[in-house]
Image 1: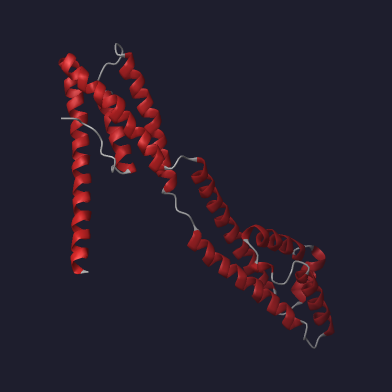
Image 2: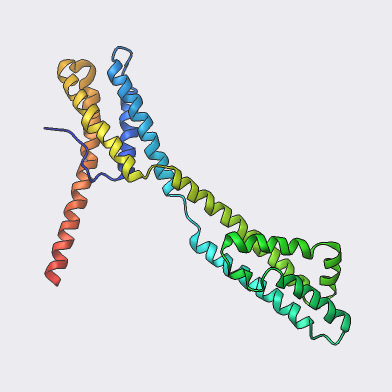
Length: 247
């Protein structure tokens, strides 16, 4: 009977078969079999690439977390703006004048800059924070009622958002640079089905003492996975039939 990995084998199952087969081949002395030695090296390279694809794909994208931190950041900007605006109505003319100065500084970055994308709103926030921390503006800010705390909270929220944004960009860059596991899986499966298994099957007949045990072990691993694949396929078909009958 032909031994082959079924096409519905999942990428993680394929990677596991690759690792298991490589470990089994380690039990052989391949010094006199250059073909199998080269085949093992090829399998190792491609299976490592598959494992790396799976590792990168499983890295979590921080979409929801970014949205939550962005909402906090937006609220901190609005809070700061409201407190500064409130100070412009102060009965103390010095405070009112300082509030106008701080508000003009904020307006220079667009009072609604927090509605921009991450790439634009974060640089503006850090630039604004830097200006507010300069000696002349620091004195102005500290003279205003209730503004110091919102400003500190904005700095914290901007740092938190920026850190997570960078992490997310790193994840996206990794995913862009690796071959999708669905494609890399096929490369590994083809090495098994087109090269490794036919060769081992033939050599198990020609030199059973050297190859039969290794071929049997690898074939058994594959049969175990294929049994799981068939069970999934049958379960899916049964569920589809049941749903059809209910309709």
